[in-house]
Length: 367
Image 1 (cartoon, rainbow, N blue to C red):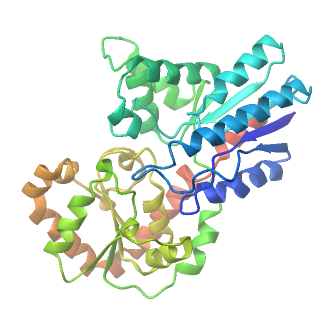
Image 2: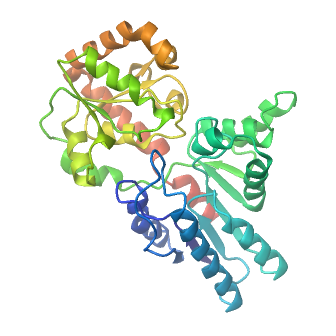
Image 3: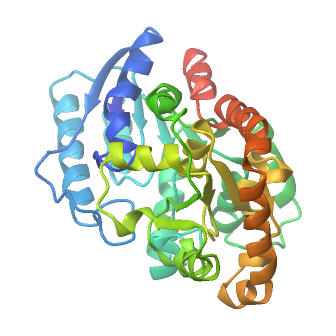
């Protein structure tokens, strides 16, 4: 069989740049013949403010990919039994592919990785478009057209099943059973797999033994769901420490990794997180992750790295719990050296469970 990899446009400051080379090589190392389907390189490079990509540029990119897939069918290069892997499930080309495969009677297997969607009320689609029928029906159609839908965490699976597939309703007596089946693998249409980020440990290895300073990083996008205003207020409350919002600076990847290597804490007050790559990056270079006990963080992190969710549920809640959070930061900084063995153990657990594509590769091998 042949694998057609429908990739994401590369953003140098995001992991999509590494995925350009890593994911195809990962599949080739597993013994597969891989053809990468990319879009044009001359799309707008700047992401839409606060977003993961450029809302206009991504459609130019995906439209070219759809054209390429259509020509592959027209030229007779796609054959029965081939596999298509979409590294982003929010791709209209999934419907185009299903259309061609079905009408031309060339059955292929479709795989797709879900990052976010309108079913997440804190995502751009959820906040700006919400439950509009066109977006919810589109996402359901993507899901139905895809043979194997991949999610990085059980939290994401539960939100997807509850908010999208069940339309946010709880009247379905089988809902919890459906979610459980999806999480434990009984539902073969949904698979929890780590994201293909096996390269991260070696990429960050040169930054692991850097001299630390009393630096606390906010490594997330500046977007409402990340609550950067809480971090900025903490900086005012704790002037003895250095607080840096990474997106306030135009950092290269190397500059960002250097800050990670020098930091003692990576901080999150996020209201949306289906995986959370930056906090994992921090653990790889001995930065203590400080995350709320909610979202994907609840299943990913040991108790010692999670603070009570209510401390940062919103800005008003933060103001009520500001003193507790400041004290927590001071204690963490004071005992930083003692926490390093726990941080390294946490990094190992995250790598094993959430930042490798073993489950995806296993499913491919048995397809």
